[in-house]
Amino acid sequence: MRELEVFNIKVNPLYRAEFLSIVESNLKNGHKIVQNGVNAATINGIVKNEKFRHALNNSDLINIDGMSVVWALSFLGYDIPERVACPDLAIDILRMAERQNYTVFFLGAQETCLCLCQKRLVNIFPKLIIAGCRDGYYQEEEEEEIIEMINRAKPDIIFLGMPSPKKELFAEKYRHILTAKYIFGVGGLFDILSGSKKRAPQWMQNIGMEWFYRFLQEPGRMWRRYLIGNSHFIWLVFKERIKLLKTY
Image (cartoon, rainbow, N blue to C red; front, side):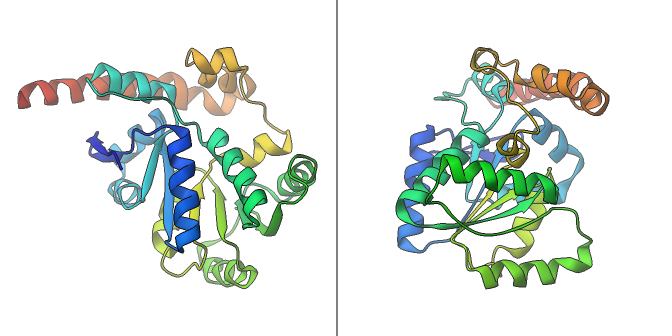
């Protein structure tokens, strides 16, 4: 399995089909794996949070979720086959789960969002078995109860629909206690599946402007992440470039 280290984290520059094949193979063999995606906000976050970086690096699979990271790694001289957006891969996983009768558990988002999400999934994947759901608004002291709840449901797959670094830290903390064989940090997937948030048109995704589409939907909440965060990410890219040049 291809892997590279950049920005002090490991990344797997694989095709979407390759990730799906690895996940399916591991589920069949009973091997537990944790997967998370990286985007510009992730790179910005790990610089300030060592626990976040450590948790991310302990993931078994790390897909390149953001187009800006694809461009950055290409600029740094790495061969990146494609962007593998978490929502796209998650849909592939759900389709595979329906086909192979794997059960899924959703943790994250608001309760109303999860209800809408389940209703829409019934139409998309009528044979998909949803073992259970739990909203992502809880206190740390509730986590033990949540873990017991998930394990009682006996899901094969867990989707963590929580923001970073919460989902990465949760997976790192409980990966050896949770009985599920595949844990995937899907971020805002449940908002998309429920219809409460819309993804950018495909042409905007292709040119790396999906972030701008999301900014237009929530400018008050997202301006700092994108306008300031993107500038910081560009600085980190050039900093990484200089570091690489010094090693030659």
